[in-house]
Figure 1 (tube, helix red, strand yellow):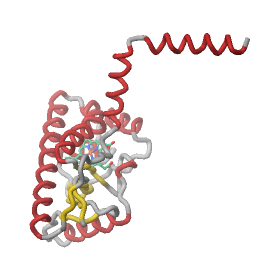
Figure 2 (cartoon, rainbow, N blue to C red):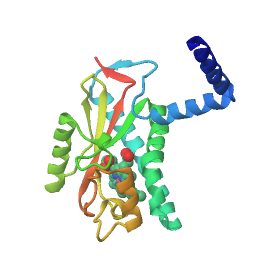
Figure 3 (cartoon, rainbow, N blue to C red):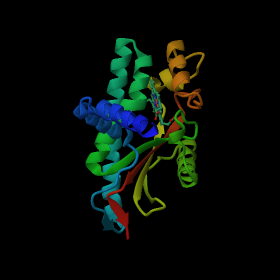
Length: 221
Ligand code: HEC
């Protein structure tokens, strides 16, 4: 009796999974790709030593990636503002922004992250080393000396590009004061998606966070 039950159950599953296998496969693949952003296993890892010219090269690559991301991000935000749909742009910030970083980073075999102490997504928090680097940037910011991007090694010897992220007027729409700057619709959507949101009450002149781009294609020997 039990075996008949198991066989018929297996049959039901078999029939279900026969249901357009290509479609299921495609969906699975899309899901996998959507989840992939933060870790990339490089196909080949190139050993380098961190002399002046490689540091220069990595600083250039880092700068190019962050510039590309900022331009895309800003133009998408402006489009959302023109459509009058900032709440919709939140979806863009949490999913599409990651996708952009994903495609840009894929070309460079780099993992792009935006980190913050006061973060919206807890996955964007800083570890100890990153907090120290960020505090150095903040000190320069306060003393009005230029905040120079830098290359530092990760615990597993990959070079990481760090650069500060500062607030701009546009950012207040989602990171400013809940009373004055953020539209109630937007605030409600943020609360729904990020119940532990800490990334509000920033002012236009504040530091917001830090880029961290790990070049997984290289390791320092
Ligand atoms: C339409 C709303 C919206 C606007 C406008 C916006 N952001 Fe965000 N921001 C978000 C959301 C949502 C997240 C969380 C993304 C995620 O899940 O990783 C986020 C995350 C971040 C993070 C990563 C750290 C964290 O808090 O999780 C940084 C840094 C950041 N934003 C900076 C900015 C800057 C700088 C601007 C202005 C140029 C800006 N944002 C404008 C919605 C917005």
